[in-house]
Amino acid sequence: MNYTSMSKQELLNEKQVLCELYNNILSEKLSLDMSRGKPEKRQLDISEKILTVLSENKDCFSENGTDCRNYGILDGIDEAKKLFADILDVSSENVFVGGNSSLNMMFDTLMRFMVFGVSKEAKPWSENKKNIFLCPVPGYDRHFAVCETLGIEMVNVPMTKEGPDMDIVEELVKNPDVRGIWCVPKYSNPEGVTYSDETVKRMAALKPASSDFRIMWDNAYCVHHLYDEETPLLNIIDECEKAGNPDMVYVYTSTSKISFPGAGVAVMASSKANIDYTKSIMNFQTIGYDKLNMLRHVKYFGDAKGVKEYMKKHADILRPKFEMVVETLEKELSDKGIASWIKPQGGYFVSLNVLEGTAKRTVSLCKDAGVVLTGAGATFPYGKDPEDRNIRIAPSFPTVEDLKSAMRVLCVCTRLSAVEKLLESAK
Image (cartoon, rainbow, N blue to C red):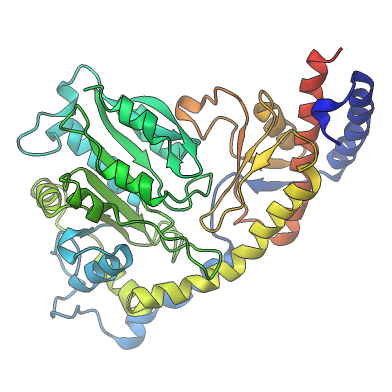
């Protein structure tokens, strides 16, 4: 029954039932964690041979004869650049292969802009009176933390089923203090939305008042499909080139959720001018990243097709978990009028929107019951969800059985916090 149409007495009766359910859960003394989108053990196990692929073949040399055990090659070995260029559908000259973290590469990119500017001709952002970034919400908490750490002001942009609301974006970039926008364009974190062709084209064709404006295109889930039928994403680098904005975008991805988080390979792609500028500064930052790690990944995966086939193993592990989450939400909440969600086709999260004003209470109830979720508000800049309604569900790490228990708790807590809220205004 729809909670929003219940009488006060009906709500009171429902609260009593839910409190009994909740007290029973408390007696179970659960200890479950759904706070971060981490791969589970079986996903890590299927990557195990990456660790021995070089020692088994006794081959530490790249295709051009470079000894990967030694110094050198700032932007990555050729075969690693080709692998990622094929995955991202760009030219190898547009690729910079780095260390183990795309987040680190994004942070470094903005730090370079702060200290040196976006090009040799531009002034450092640190000399500006104000720097603003547009943040599609709900979004990725670590993107927001980077801006907050660097003193970059953030402005919310609502997400739609097509991606960021481009009418709002096009209006906001008329402000010369707006320097950029964060984007997770495929299976977005946490909504699971893939940007439409129109959104990508409008993004690439932006005419910002600031010549320093840059799109931070975090394509973290570009190969993380849950089903055989992949959701296509238009190539932003090509579209920026067509629109006359070749230097406006920086694309990032990594193997963090493909091979080993913290021990994978990260990559940045952009225009040749941007890559050359980056290299001119990074020459003084590092002699080169871990070429042995690059080589072992290339040896193991082979090519982009090999990565695609390999990711089907991940999908087979993750798909049942995501389907169980969505099925539970549909069974427990679909007729209550207090929650909405999107069934993702890929990525690592399910975004749950609960009754306005109840997300914090729901997460708190879950925590007290032994289920840890991502903090309410984390999917918004400064940790402030203006409607207090978004909760990010991360199904990947728990076992299926633990996930079932956690979802049972989450649904009871969602219902209980909604009834409490509705009773505040019930007559």
